[in-house]
Length: 185
Ligand SMILES: Nc1ncnc2c1ncn2[C@@H]1O[C@H](COP(=O)(O)OS(=O)(=O)O)[C@@H](OP(=O)(O)O)[C@H]1O
Ligand SMILES: Nc1ncnc2c1ncn2[C@@H]1O[C@H](COP(=O)(O)OP(=O)(O)O)[C@@H](O)[C@H]1O
Image (cartoon, rainbow, N blue to C red; front, side, top):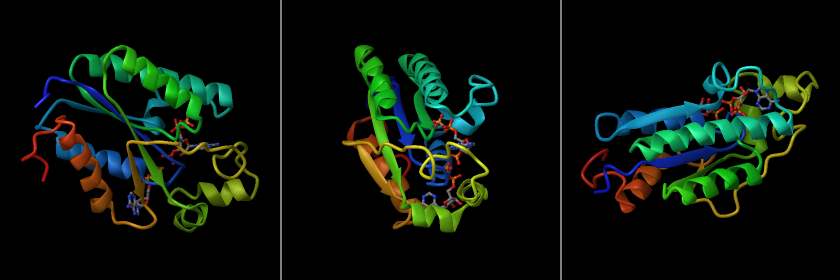
């Protein structure tokens, strides 16, 4: 197993799609099995990206900062899970290129759910506000989300239970020998 190989597992998707839920479940599975760290957009915005807003420029800067920290960690053998909307394909591809240049595996996971499902779910009540015009530039409502064109994995959080998506991502890591085959079953 390439247990000394770090990687970046990049979860992208709209607000409420299930990035945090899946990333925490993944972290729990990997913890104690291999070095792992989680960078969640919501949380990163309280320190590394404090002060950044949601303009295209600020989102791109946020993704660039997260990507750089993820790469630093991954180069030292950490399996880094990123959970960030990261709505622009170009920004995600930029991190992918940076990772490739350093020989770090970059695995993009699209956490997909229909806008209708997200509005019905509305975990944080943000869609209600965004639809009422109270949150400008809200992803999927009044701001773009560019879906990945060829992600390494897709999780349909509106059509499959958390455990199914979790297992698919774990299996992808096992196949790439980034997780031992017996672990995290
Ligand atoms: N305008 C707008 N659009 C989208 N999301 C918004 C917005 N304003 C605040 N929020 C909250 O910020 C969280 C997303 O932060 P990210 O750092 O992941 O966003 S980004 O990658 O820079 O686009 C996001 O968290 P998640 O719901 O966990 O995705 C929201 O809670
Ligand atoms: N298959 C699934 N994968 C992930 N989350 C799911 C799934 N099905 C339902 N959910 C629910 O959707 C919500 C997603 O919220 P969250 O993980 O905070 O999303 P995000 O981090 O993308 O904003 C949670 O309440 C979670 O329980």
